[in-house]
Length: 100
Image (tube, rainbow, N blue to C red; front, side, top):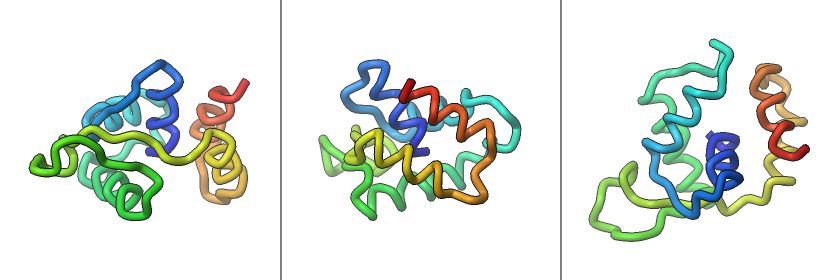
């Protein structure tokens, strides 16, 4: 989910909601990253709760429809990906391609 947020921002998106992020997640390629929308939403909401992603805009909307933006720097995401032992190689490559 973090890599998907970073990819959206690299393409110039200033804010996005969960549905934009999920579409990006499913487009990363490699079947090992593909997981259900419920699992992705739970991950996204945990990132918001941990303040890695900031929900902006109208607070009356459901969380997944609120605009959001990433609060982590790309280099921080890259470090996390390098340290993640269980990270699928195709996801690691997608993250590394962001920083070339």
